Length: 113
Image (cartoon, rainbow, N blue to C red; front, side, top):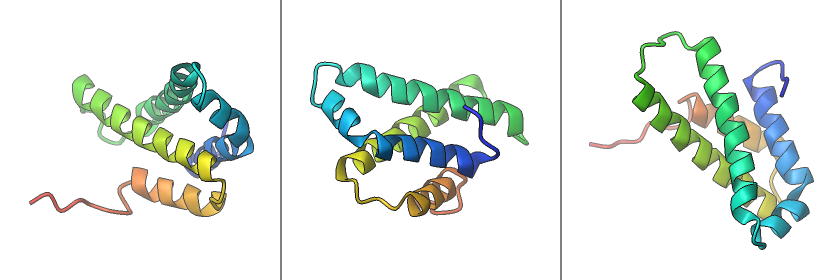
């Protein structure tokens, strides 16, 4: 996938999910659900991993830490994309901005203690 920046790449994923919502829902309701989810997750995780490798300021993160972070962002974002395709009432520009801010740490920092 080629995109000029991270926001544009997120928008491509979102547009794909929304434009193919009927097909995605058909697959989710079929025996191919796992395959469809794996395609979404594999492609998005690959994008995030490539993004990290090419833009990370501090590339000293261990492989195990990077792997869990990529899994967390991949499955969370994939779930949001699937849910957005399900309801079909999503504003792609708003969702792009929300996911960008979430992935970049600008949206929320969880108060864990």
